[in-house]
Image (spheres, each protein chain N blue to C red):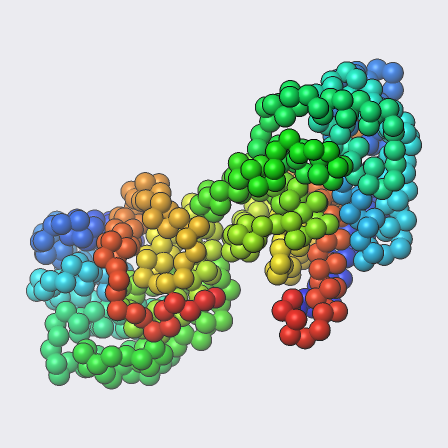
Length: 315
Length: 255
């Protein structure tokens, strides 16, 4: 059972992170001015995709509180209408790079929230029928992600979840003492895709849940010690997706203490970004989004445990 | 101190050699190398019961010089009232190992330490877990990180059929020790990893996904230049190759 004071620590992290994201939302703008190249615009769609995926979860989780939900809804509204020009920017990129899954990955969470761009969907359906779409060479975890977005959007699957999962690092459950940083991110994203970014923890196969329950504490300890808050945040998300999350108070307190005064979460201990506002934003937006994500899921799980009747096995 | 660490390294190297098939007297060889008996005794106290490990694992009589140096170490460095449970346990393990290899029926290990009851059983009397030997309360209450660290320091107690209270605690928490092994490898703390790996070789319930055998070989490859690392890993590999052993108290329990 997580103590109420520990839940408060978790909740506070997200509250402050969302406030920072809302305050700094202009940093997500793909085209800052006329000098922004098309390449840069496409590159800057990635943060919007992450905002959409995580923002959707933040918005849907009632535990975030009405103020958080309202701020998040504003963020998503602005992102769709202003930053993505009502979806037209996604159509533009899709026309330039028909086989890129990026616009599709960004579109899905917005579509699930009720936003639509019919022209985008028409092109997507025609491209998706191509053999080339399924044959695209991508890392296994990315392929799993594309498969998951196809499922979420109702498209025929280019690969089953089982086959896609089996090809990932996590799917093979290798020696846990070999986890380096890139492996860590592959593990977290495998879990994100299997659980629809925390919305459906039942999507995690039992054997992977067991594997993660056994080894995640060691990895949390490791990246806590290293002070890599970005990956630690993602690992705390994974924890909150497990059947019996640890919700480790030591890790959460350290995570909360790493958060900056204004609510931003630095990527690593001792590395505060400086310089142009855009560069500072680029260094901070991802760990801050992750902090909000971890906070809202962990708080939700902890509150659920508080509400669960005694003996229900969720403590 | 440098002298002592060199002597420890030499003695541990001899033990590794003995475990790998040599059949000479460990202490005799080391003594002849350094020629400093006091240093050899100090090194023996540092390695504790492992001085007699070849006899224990290979089931053969202990060479008299090894028994003598072990006995000298027990007498020269008795734990005091302020000694930590770790020191007390290490001392207890040496007395126990001596009792086993000499197997003199009337031999009775002396009072083991400041924190627990005396080990009053004879060497052939089964020891129920928790009876005899120093206190394990702190160990029992330790986080998995501290637990693994402490166990690793006491890796000399990880022997086949171990019946100490420390072994019983280890047997109760296989997943915690496994996590500690992961942590130690990630930190490249090869000595701790080797000690934890040695415990994992004698307890049940280790998750198969840990990849213990590959992990032991990895630790040996990366950290084996330290003879103490090599000693723990070779002990673990020998014990892994020679299972099953008589069950330790509490074996097979979960986390």
